[in-house]
Length: 159
Ligand code: ADP
Image (cartoon, rainbow, N blue to C red; front, side, top):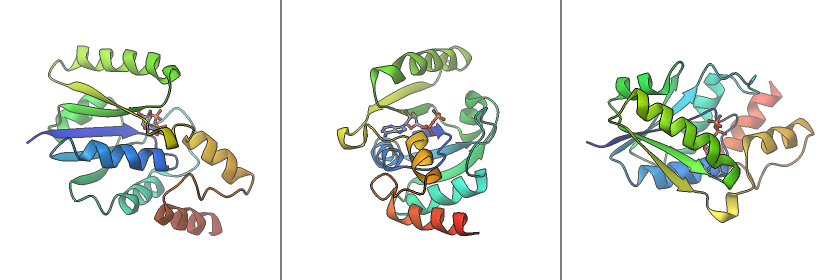
């Protein structure tokens, strides 16, 4: 069984992430979305909130699981018995960091491969940072975030 991990902060989940989840889950038997707990960036949403968004946003994908992780990605891969990492590439600017990460990971765990999925052009401008900015200023994120995730965000921000 070919198990892949799609790691990230997902703070919050966007349509760009959903696109990678759909396409990534189609090329492996099981895709585990790894939600990073110890991000150096101070997140807008707690890990529980981000897990809830991803579970809701991917509930139509039967071979997708959502789990939190902290520490080294390679340790999480081993724990999940995964040998594939799925990452999305939006622009050339993503590439330098991603290449470094992929090479460092393979150095630590030679049995793994990183697979890069190029962003769907219609989502290439979407990032969690942009979504956070819009939310911060009370704007409409309807074109950036899956519909069922917007409901969760509204609920969280109302509390
Ligand atoms: P990180 O905190 O790891 O940078 P993010 O949560 O921002 O992660 O993103 C996780 C992954 O999703 C990364 O591989 C990133 O390149 C990819 N990604 C984010 N937004 C998009 C998008 N609009 N299209 C394609 N891939 C994306």
